[in-house]
Image (cartoon, rainbow, N blue to C red):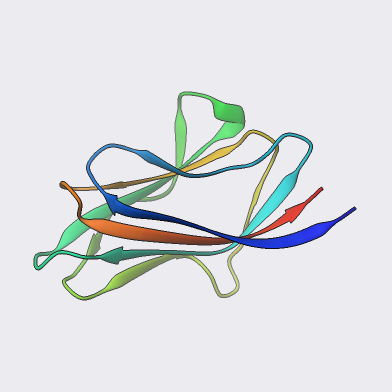
Length: 110
């Protein structure tokens, strides 16, 4: 089994869910860090969703969390980790147009 650390980014996220990361087939992934930064001059809300096997119904990691001006939300980090299975999808959604940037650090195990 090979282990590989990777980083994925998404800029200018708006009020529709955007894919930050899709776990490849024949792979397990551990999300070791997920940060969402407010890039506006007003407070926003952020949701982070996990779709099991590419399904249509998300499980929320965080839903409508308030992120003040000049701040970021650490949705995953520290002692908290989340394991993704093959074809699971990680998505991020903000509360308005071009309101946030997201960074995910993962460990892929193949």
